[in-house]
Structures are given as C-alpha cells and as structure tokens.
Length: 325
Image (cartoon, rainbow, N blue to C red; front, side, top):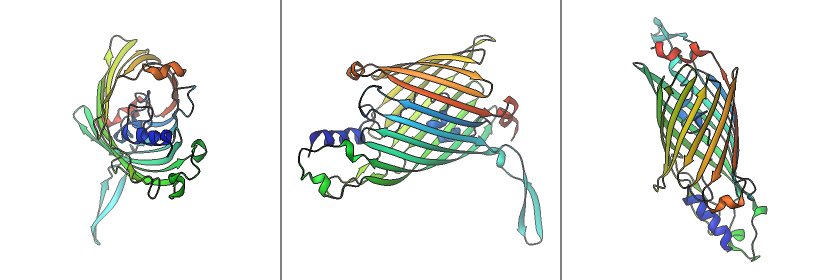
C-alpha cells in the first residue's frame, strides 16, 4: 500500500494541528460565533444570514477549501395558543416563542482527497438571568464524505485498498451541543462538536472503523468602550480534541464608530492573522489573511477568508430579550 495514502489517512483522523483537520477552520467566527456554537442561534435577536469562504494555504496543491452558508434567528413575537386540560376546559396561554432560536447551515469542506458536504439544523433555548442571557443549543448534522479516487495514485495495480470494497461516498449523521452566556459587554461559550464520534468505514478489510473525534471549544471575550468612537474587544478561543490536542487563538479587535474594525489573531504554534471589516447599513463584510509560522508557509501564499453577513432587525429587536421574561 502506498505510504503517502496511509500517512494522509493517519493525519486526517488523529490531528487537529497537523496538515489536515476534521472540522473546518475559521478565523472570523467572532463575526458569526454560530459557526462554533449552536447555542448562539437567535441569541442576539437578529435574523442573520452569513456566507463564508476560506482558501487555506493558497498555492499548495489539494489544500483545504471551505464554503458555508448559515441562517439563524429568534422567534421573538409573542403569540397565544389554546391549551386544553380536559375536553371542557380550555385555557389561553402565551407561547414560549420568545425563548426559542433556530438555525441552519449548508457547508462544503474539501481537504486533500476528502470532501465533506452536509447540512445541519439547530434548536436553541434562551433564558434571561438578570441582565444577561444563558442559552443552550443542539445541532443535528448529516453529511456526505466523498473520497476523490482520481487524486489517489498507486504503484501496485493489485493495491489491497482497491480490491477490498473501497467506499467512495459515505453518509454520516452526527450532532453538536453548546452553551452560551451573553451580556451587553461580554460573552462566553462552550461547545462540543461531533458528539457521536461517527465511524467512517472506508474499506471492508484494508481500512476499518476510522472515526471522527470529539472536539471541544471554550471561548470568551469582553468589549471595552474607550470613548464614543473606539471600542476594543480582546477574546480567547481554546480548542481541543478527545485526545487533548490543544490549540489556542488569542485575538484583539478595534472598532471605530461601530462601522470599521481591524484585528489581529495568533493561533498557537500555527499562524498569525490580520482581520479587516466594515458595516454598511445591514451588511457586514470581513476579510482575514493568515500567515503560517511553520515550514509550510514557505510554500504557500497564506490563507484567505471572506465573509458577508446580513442582519435583519433593529437594535430594539436585538435587545428585546432583556425585557421579555
């Protein structure tokens, strides 16, 4: 069996910090934290549509390429329903629609010879605690994993992998869970991705029972109001797997007039990133460029990420959750 193929699979399934990752990597999750935590769905009261595209290690053949579209919202309008405790007794009670957030995502992630395309749906529940909000979110995912055989080459025509039922397309279910604390000045969250640790059976005998590892995200940030024009928001994200492969993102963004922002990010033992963005009416545009800090950087033109968001709902709608319960 060709060594390059074996090494690719080993890296793909056991490393978060190596040349491949099981979960798509994002820089601008600060603009759309729903990407890393399902509990964010509807937490700010906006209806948000987000498109993101990331080209990692530009110039490197078969480098990771990711696209995603997400939508998330809050069911804010209070409505009334009739509940019957008996055939003769019917009571009009307000529904709990103001506490529910919904979300969904379509994504496509290409990583070497592996392509993962899928869809997810999210249910979130938000609880007011004094001047803050505690949210819980559960996300169901189903995706297709495709192995691009044309990118694989073998020296031996009797390669065992090709003669033992190689599965080129697999359908995989999974789930994610998150908790999110939101205040006007700060936020914090914890989430777990790939709860099921679903198995991928690439072949019948040559490749058995590779599985997706559980990933954990712990993050938080605080916004300092310098004056009526400038705000500074430092934040931290710590990521790890079930095998305790830890990576941290240290970030800092500066906002000017709530319209322009710029930031820097350091990903431990991996890369350094610069971020820029602007707000135009209800639209948000963001760009990030990261440069690797390892030997791979000498062979690429860095990683580029673009995001566009549209938020529907004014500020009164956004902070309505402060008075709803």
